[in-house]
Length: 261
Image (tube, rainbow, N blue to C red):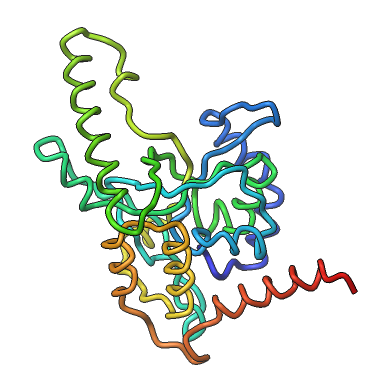
C-alpha cells in the first residue's frame, strides 16, 4: 500500500516490532506452526506478486473478502509527481441500524491473507506501521471470487444470518458473540488524523494498475473492479508512476535467483 516510507520511520519500526505485535496478539489464532494473523489487503498487496516477490512473504492461505462499512481512501501522501499517494481503509461513521443493506454499498473488496508471525511483522515494517499506517481491527467476509457478484451474494447471505442471530440473541438474552459476523482481521488505516479528514490524493495510474491486477487475480466482484478502473488518477512526471516498474524489477530478481546457470 504505502509506496514511500521515510528511512527514519523504517528504523523506528524495527525498534517497535515487539510493540506492534503486542497490539495485535489479542486477535491471533494458533496453529501447529505457531501464531498466525489474518491480514486484509486492499491496495497493492492484493497482488500476490507484491507479497511474494516484492515483500518476500509466503502467505499460508489467501482468499477474496469484503470489508463492509468502510471506504477505500487514497489519503497516505507519497512523493508528488512520482507516486502521489497510497491507499488506506477509512471507516464510514454513520449508523446502518435502520438499513443494514447499505453496508454493501459502503464496502471495500480485497484479499484476506493468513500470515505467519514473521510475515505479519514484515507487513507492518514495510508498510511503515505505526508512522504511515496504524493497525485497524475489522471483521471481513471471505468469499470465492467469480469476477461477477460472488462477494455481494456472500454478503447478503451473511447479513441475513447475522440479523437472524441478532434477533434470536435478543430474545434469548444470549452472548453477543453469537451475533458477530465474518472473520476477525487486521488491516491498515492512515496513521494521522489530518490524513483521515483530508481529501483523497489521486494515485498514479501505475499504482492503480497494481490494485486492479490484484483485484482481477482474485476475481473480485465486477462492480468493484470497475470502480477501481474509474478512479481518478494524478499527474506524474515519470510516465504513469513507478509502482508497476518496481514490481517488475522485484519479479525479475526473483526469477534470476532461481535460474539454473
